[in-house]
Image (cartoon, rainbow, N blue to C red; front, top):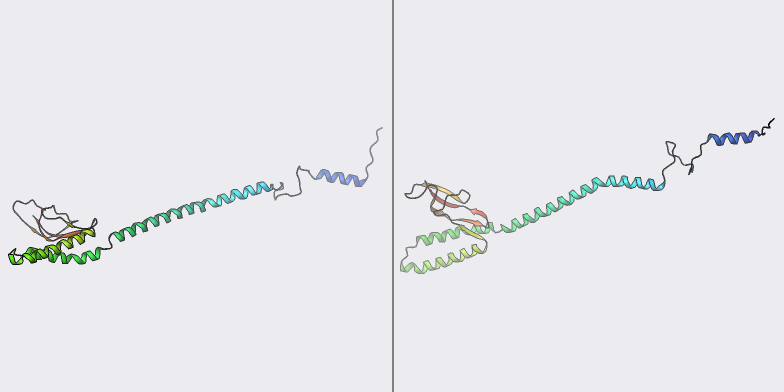
Amino acid sequence: MSETPIVDEEQQDVAEQEVSEPVTPDSTGDEGPDGNSAPSAIDELQAKYDALLEEMKPLKEAELRAFAELENFKRRKEQEKSEFIKFSNEKMITDILPVLDAFDMALLQSDGGDNSKALLDGLQLIKKQLDSFLEKHNVSRIEALNEEFDPNLHQAIKKEAKEGVEPNKIILEMQAGYRLNDRVIRPTMSVVSE
């Protein structure tokens, strides 16, 4: 007959308790809500890092968009400033054009006699000075006589039939037109052939 070991009740309770609790390697007693052991510190940091990277993506895109908009704004403002400087003298020049017109009319009205020669020379000198002033400020006269009528450059005040002249040609310049740089600041007032 074999002998069975005698185990007192205390030892049996401890043995049953050890069997009922599963032992896991690296078990520190920290468990997550689903019963698994909590992730290690490195895994937690990696997860936080990945989450922050995802949060940063829209911020980075917004930053790049804002930077591009700022650059476009700077470029537009620089262009507007350049345009303003380029055409800032327009008002002054349009104010001086009637003076130039008066000299043109005076030169046309002179009879060319000996007593008017000094006056004519003086008027021509003043006209040259005015022309030089305008040229210095990038103002140029629009050539119109015998040119094809262009509504961008010329203003027709009358249509007139003239023998031997093609239709739509400028046959008389009533008031000179001018450009400031490439912009027409006053069109040529003209009579156009029919």
